[in-house]
Image (tube, rainbow, N blue to C red; front, side):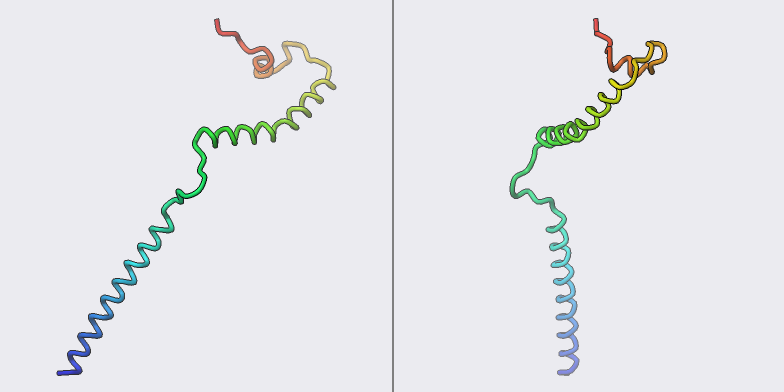
Length: 95
């Protein structure tokens, strides 16, 4: 009788141990997956402003170089200019 009871005791301990380990692993996974809300966080507007500033800074040298290249070229006739360039230089005024 004693060996049989010992078998059941070990079986119950094993089942409880595996269940506890599984629950612990799930809780740990969910805790890591949760976004961190501590510390400074940016609002949507602040993030958009940072992105806009970064893009402007990155584009400034390219725009300056493009302007220098355009000044070096002879101005094309109005008919040969692509429509998007005409619109960019002379946007339509709402009226």
